[in-house]
Length: 83
Image 1 (cartoon, helix red, strand yellow):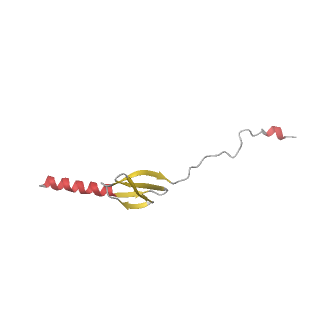
Image 2 (image 1 turned 45 degrees about the vertical axis):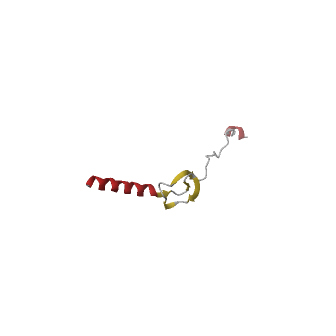
Image 3 (image 1 turned 180 degrees about the vertical axis):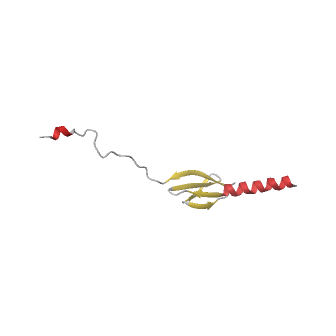
């Protein structure tokens, strides 16, 4: 009897863990229900139906940044400017 209770408790805890979704900042998750688009989750705490719904896409909303140098590569040497 105790083994059955342990298994049932494990299944309940596992189901609750799968149902809770925390979306980080600068992200959006797309939820599909039975293979069709259902909704988009914005950042924050959400609860989904684990058997019917799944996270299809985890999209990052942060802008892509490029590093740029402030000096050109073909910058003339200092000695060329001396008079």
